[in-house]
Length: 545
Image (cartoon, rainbow, N blue to C red; front, side):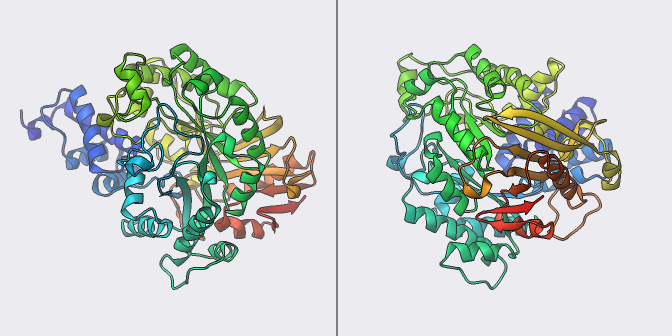
């Protein structure tokens, strides 16, 4: 049976729809990743050939009509996509290869000796872009903005992620120059602006730039998130810190020679939250010294123990990569990695413990599966959701409930006006890191969809002077496709007043105990808060209530 004959069968149509759903869900970044999705699903339906892109588009159009998701599907099939459905364009910037401050962990690939940043093998997309541009931050950001702009994406709201190892452990001159280059690249994009030699001037210029930094993430270790590191990250304009936690068990951390303790993680989490940062954890199920049951318990501990409770989570199942010490353990029969089936089962169980206020960002490393021992498939997230469906359970983390993703999954199309009418205000309160957190959101109860949210914290003991006796806004986010600053799109969910409503609600709650409120604002969003009565104090936007 040729492809045209197959296209007439119901199985072929089902496969096309499932492929389209998987592409929209996983947002692959190259044709090779799309081909993997096609192969997996075609094998499931026993198709004699991979469905052609026009057949996938046609099947999706017949099922759902001319919708926003069809436009997105076209762009994903035609171009290298970017994750803008959540509202911002994400630009990763890779630092140059350098050794870790504590040495090398047992499972860690990469490093100076092979010319890659620590924990990267060099084949990851961000690592390849970094190497292509000599790990120069200005060139990396400029090239990525140009690429995104040329394929039709708005880049006026950009989230920067600094990757490549423990950034605060690098030399101060390197750190300062790297961050300055990032802001200069944003400021000079599509303009005649000249690069600045002073970071403060570059940050001020970015408040009015065409490409504004609405968030800056720095990856580091718990033992490099002390007070001095936090003050410097604030000066850099950072708004989020991702900690390489890896495990909540000290015996596991000691066995892999991680070089930090669980106590370091607890202290770093508290210091960061009391400084208004968003906090992300990287965790690695399957490490030596752990097992399936302990790993399930780890996820339970992360969200039941008040000392942890991260806002974001990246789950990186342990992989065995040639050249690592773990590879030698595996060859000697001293270590066995999880199979694909075990990882899927583990994460499906773990997702039952995830609260509505956490966002699972990643479930798998970018390392190609043919370069590692363990996982054999690159679509773990999709397999996890299929397993959850078997159990009759749906994940309720932020990513799974974002309004754009959620309505597409349900096959529902709502205008922004309908969303405004149907959205309910929901307030969730919980204790974390000796403080009190309020997760305030607008949601569509009929669809279990999240339109936007704000994180408000009543801190325990902030050490930054300007934050004493002050309520903290750690995050404000309204979901939907990216809309240019000052623009309005009737089918988008941003710029419809949800942000101001959420902020007003946070201010009302804060008045219960405080007469001031502070926001950790991306440099490029400071004008937004100024219009709402906030004034810059140190690196925060502060308002008297």
